[in-house]
Image: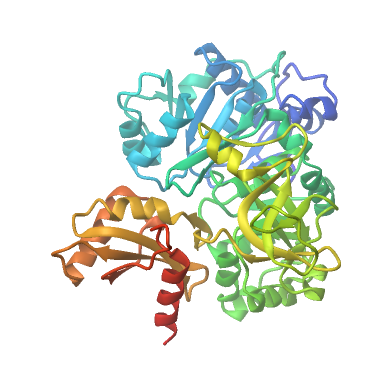
Length: 537
């Protein structure tokens, strides 16, 4: 059985200049990990298929990269785009920018070249760090972008990029004398179809009482705690819950590069994992394993299995609780902010709830913005933390539309019961939740309508037997064109050429005319209901 402490095969940590900051002081300038490195340098901080890293080594590497970026002209507030799989260098980039005052922009590794280029340009990044696994896409996205002053390749070579090790090896691993708290700006798609950066001041994440309360309820910090990261770190939830939270508390992280149910169980057993974050489709994969496979793995160490991102079928959740015990915690949150959290006991007593927010943190409002009493459905509004209001980068109108005073909305519909527990009745209506990924129909529609045979399009989601939803492209044919299997194949190929694979329709449905509202806009809910009804017959 593997141990979470210390890193085997390494000698004592070399002498380095260590920060004298207290844990509280260090957290305010991005140096939280440096305190862990000072207090237990040889203890395991990160385990992955690329090797293990002690707290000392991980911290030193973060200091080196921070200095390397500064030496190449980057400073406080500058954007650093990161296209990288789950590997130690992703973690180093996160830690380095966090203490160098820079703004990290993680990029979805499944995006196409044009999509990557859009994010890099839109965020105003001055540096692009790219995993060699995505060398062609990274080089193509960066080609001709004069603003990108720093290009660093990770692992396998990336044409025109400096090698990561060459960039950092010459720098000192001593703790920074002048750390500055940085931030992250994840991208989330909007109704316009173009991804939007969600910007929050660096201190904003530290001023979310609901998130701080969640960390307390998770019980992080006990000696022997270990977190298993099952999801891609370029997503906000794994980045926060599976990296920032545990490492910030001195808890080692076991990093998976792609989810595999059998391997996840082996890692829980081997590392005595206490905490993990998953999405419902992962639960389904675990439950599909043979009984003997699940029985032969010791998962009794698990204390917290956090899940969100998509609704979890009640039958699946009950089976998970029956197997693992009351260790499931369901949250309601997004890149824009944290809402609330439900324990297993709360969910079993009130099936479907996502938790009881603190008074005033969540309001249900009608279409005119009036607050609704318990029991009445309406739009869910969350309270923005003081000093931590987010903004959609470069889109002031979209930012204004999301806010109502100190409250903001993701457009979801829900209800509070008499006890103050929140139930989400309908996620942002248009979003398709495919395998734990959010697909925004407008982005797919924008590609479909470029085909001359398509007058208009309305992408929707239908339930998938494998869990979550399946992306279906519903198109209104232009005059002179007829539905055919060949045309459907053309449209599917068009999407594959322009969009990440998880966004592409798995089915094309043809319509002579799409239903519309009085103002001419497509009535997407009717389209979705019609497609789902047809599947049910």
